[in-house]
Each structure stands twice: as C-alpha cells, then as structure tokens.
Image 1: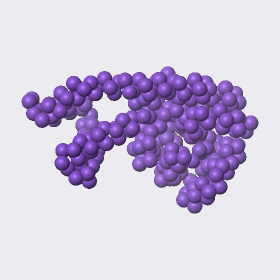
Image 2: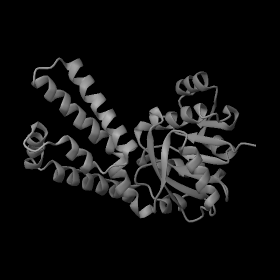
Image 3: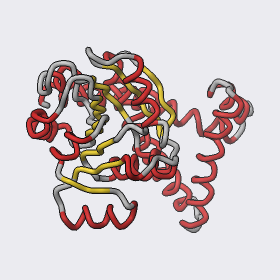
Image 4: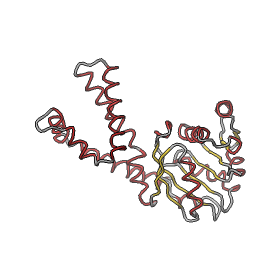
Length: 268
C-alpha cells in the first residue's frame, strides 16, 4: 500500500510538488491537501482530483506530512497540527531557514523531521532539492523524503549546517540567473535588436549553456575559455565583467542570502 502524503500549503511550491507527484504516477487517493480557502480547495480538487481538508485533519490521516509555508507561518501551523502528530510519522519541511531543531521543539517526541531546500525550477520538473535529516530521522525516512522530492527535482543529501549556503546558491539561485537574463536582454535591445529577438537569443543561449555544462561534465572555466579567443570579442566582454567586479558581487550577494537565511531561522 502506498504511504499517504498530506501537503500543507498549496501555494506555488506546494502545488508544484502535488502536480509532480501526480505526473510521476502517485495514486491520487494517497494524496491529501491542507487548505483553508474554499475557493482554492475547489480549484485543486477539480484540477487534480485530490481530496482537500483542513490542515489538522490532513496531518492526522497522513503517513507523511509535507509543510510548504512561509518561515514566519511555521510556528502557528505546527502549534495547530502538533496534537494530531505521532512518533514515527514523517514531517518534511520546505520552509527556508527553519531548522529541524525548531520544528522538533514544536511537535511530539519521535516525529521524524526532514528539512528541504527546493527551488522554483521544480515547476517544470527541473528543480534542485537539498535534504537534511533531523534527530529522529532514519534512512527509511530520508529515502521517503528523497522519493517525494525526486518527482520534481534532483535531490542531494547535505548536513543541515550547510542548508543556509544551499539556500543562497540553489534556493535563491534562479533569481540571480533571471536577473542576468534580464540584463542581457536589455543589452540586446540597447545594441539595436528587437526585444523578441534579444529574448530568444538570450534564453536559448542560457538553456544551451546549461545543457553543455551538464552533458560534457567540463569545468565552467574550461568551457568559458573555449569561447574566449585571445584578443577577441568575448575576451573584451569578460574583461569588462572583471573590471566591474561581477564575480565579487555574486559572492557578496550569496553571503547576504545566507545571512538572511540564518536570520529567518532565528526569527521562526
């Protein structure tokens, strides 16, 4: 029999996980969604054929509870569902910055907690999810969490003390790349290209470059040097990026994201 899964929080990431599980062949009868909004509940029921109930009812029934809420909402949600949670049950948290220790302090002793840092490419089944076990989590619990997240993402196990860095890199990373894409499109328009043409050129270049990285396994420095002829156009452009300290700016940005992740943990 398939373990039952309750997803509490049906926002973008929660629905992404739900739709990914359905596409991956998970029995809809084994899925529950916790949702307060009647309109949203109706949408999800019609779209996926899934049963939508109150958070506490979903948590009481499921073998695995997946919590997909904002960090600042975690304490209230845990207080609500804690009375119906039980030892041995798996609780998977997708809330940025919230530690397993914080969650364990709000739930009954023996609940197995797994912390996950997902990212938005999960919407197209190309996500990156880093998972870390809590105190009462054994290999079976971790494997179950891994199987859940693999419906939409590549999954990597990391020690929890690395999760703030993961948040800064893969969790927030899509935004950095979209920022670069925006900048390249605007540059294309500035250089005289129609916006649709600039957009097509940039997006395909990003997609193709990522595929080249993945499929060749080459270090990015090697691939960059293959494009950069001595004294050529790319060399001139890269020199400007170095002069403007773009590499240092990325480091500073990721440090800021890591520090904010730590702040969220402290205020959860």
